[in-house]
Length: 252
Image 1 (cartoon, one colour):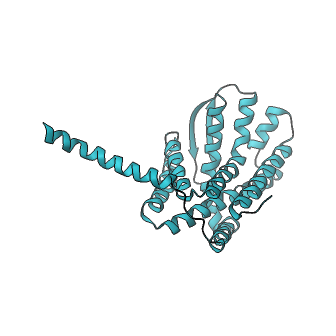
Image 2 (tube, rainbow, N blue to C red; image 1 turned 180 degrees about the vertical axis):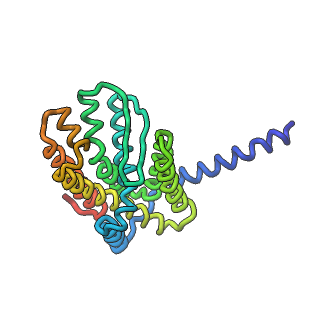
Image 3 (cartoon, rainbow, N blue to C red; image 1 turned 90 degrees about the vertical axis):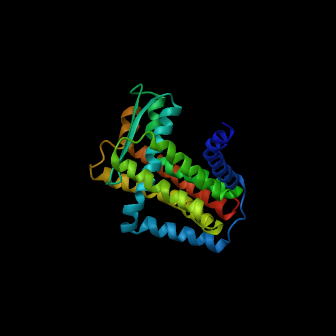
């Protein structure tokens, strides 16, 4: 009986070792990278955001953060999260149940466009503290939680691809590469949060976004949709300025 117990405990011990290694790497601060690398990752992220063919693919990451922010806001305001869908055209849909009007619905609707910037700001704060690897593992954990709410095949594929890429980086690559990826992801979230706000207003000006978050907020509050677009832009630009200052060590 004793050998059997020992063998059955083997897999659990191995899992414990893996989780222990992940935890140790996540909570251990790493030395800040060179300014050249930080600025290089910023430049790469900027090119990805501005170059349309690359943006068309990588915008899915912003959509994931957008819809996840809707979902978190719904949960925090007491609404029941029904599910999240991510579509191949980079759009998404988060369905929650609760009062059709009121502060909870307003906060939930507002959270989408500002969410990627706020997530990027949180990532910049972790980088400022030296937790580049911890940031990557935290993103993996958040994607795993988000996976439970996905309700379509493309959304499932998007989350699995993103999560697998992050696990590969955090488990197999060198610390310097992990740090570079963490900075690139953070810059991309900060910079990539801004462009969809401009795209939203362009669509609204052409009459093609009557069901957008800004127009939903206008119906909920009686305040013009353009005001809400302005608020989205103010928050995302503010997150970019503050997050960029934290990353670069610039005092504001």
